[in-house]
Amino acid sequence: MKKIIILMLLCFVSLEAVYTEKVKVPSITFAIEDDPNIRVMQRNCQWCHSYGYILNQGRQSKEFWHKIVLKMRDVYHAPINARDEKIATEYLYKYYGNGREKEGY
Amino acid sequence: MQRREFFKISFAASAALFGSKSSAFATSKPIDTQKVSPVLFPEKKPLIVHSDRPPLLEAPRTTFTRAITPNDEFFVRWHMPIIPTPINMDTYYIHIHGEVEKRLYLRVADLKKDFKPVEVTAVMQCGGNSRSAFHPSTSGIQWGSGAMACATFKGVRLKDVLAKAGLKNSAEWISLNGDDKAVMAKIESFKRELKIDEISDDTIIAYEMNGREIPFLNGYPVRLVIPGLYADSWVKQLSDIYVTKEYQPYFFMDVAYRIPDNECECEEPNNLAKKTKPLEEMNVKSYIGYPDNQMQIQSGTNLRVKGVAFDEGYGIKNVFISLDMGKTWQQATLGKELSKYAFREFSYNLKPMKKGTLTIMAKAVNNKGEEQPFAHDIPWNHGGYKYNGIDSVTVEVV
Image (cartoon, rainbow over all chains, first blue to last red; front, side, top):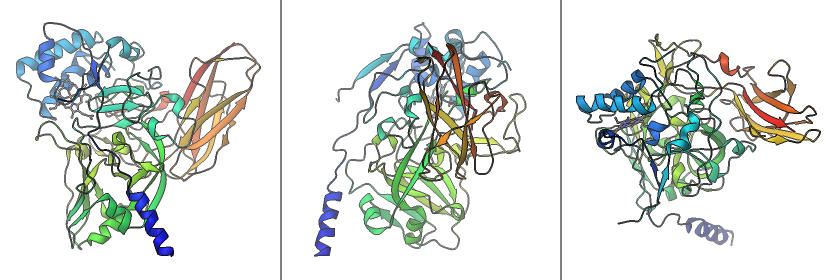
């Protein structure tokens, strides 16, 4: 008798099916400034994460942004060519810069 | 093609971030002005959204009045943009291999059937929680203080699973991997490494969170739970346990998530520590959940301050409240200790009489005698990790 009750309980527990289809995560456009160079950003910076990652950093120095671009290229293997590396850094500093060339301490 | 929902978040929405950052080399309070987003994520209440892909969701201050964080307010942090939905539980396996007597493929049903279930209530906190407090800014997500949560996890001991596979004498390390993926094969996935003899009885492979399945965004169907340690080790969608003789170097352990290996765990921006170590144990911290900043409080009425405190597992001894910018401190009342790894609720009653602004500070002390420093006394580290400054909220007494 005891056994039957336990078995029945087990059945109830294992019937719980959770996801029957792919879970949809909403897609949010984190808008960055429009500019002729936005294409460099679109080309290089959208593969692995949203622009939310960029906006989230706040205003930063040129050196900070340059280091970010280099980190994406060297550490995360983003295929960023030398020309785009420069343009992306300029773009980021232009719109999300804090007016300082160097990281100020 | 699947129809997707699109939302647009303007720069203005995140503009709260700007201007508030001083340039001085000093630590300040983490950002606390960000609003929850109206865009709803699966199984979540409105949360602060830092990114949709990968999803980065932070809980607002008001979440932190209760020892247990509801699943729908539990923060979300992924590193890789591709997160599969495990639909067929008969084909979802955790593969245990390497230096073991027999290779195992365990389904979630096998975990439930063949192992002793255990429960642990523990705080999960991102190592970069409160990173926005550090100046100069350190690269990484600029979290406020809501990248933390506490839940009761149910699952099976990692040790028991390893024992079932049978560890060979040569087994020293395990590396753990989840199912989330990068867009390019070259990018390493988010693997973690643990030393076998350091695995505690409280380290579990969890399949339940607060009595329900683990939410998709929190690592469904199984995730690792390592009480006391920062969340970067709590692998989500765990699918692979590889037992090895030697330590395997991985990017996220050997380059990211590292802190200075010195007494103060600190360094200077232009003089970084030569020796570093992985980010591991948490430190003592508390956070006020109520009232919220800028709330209007009627003078002469009762105000009940509420919040949570925790540490790496010594347990919370006291929480103190200050109403005079930290000159004098009064003891708050502590709630029940759910576990030494859990959020400990605290509360403090007061009746503000004087009109104007009132700043309420909270400071936790653990059983080891460690206490939270003032925000400005917290030294800098390049990853912006382990911030645990004294929290404060400022309300308007009217």
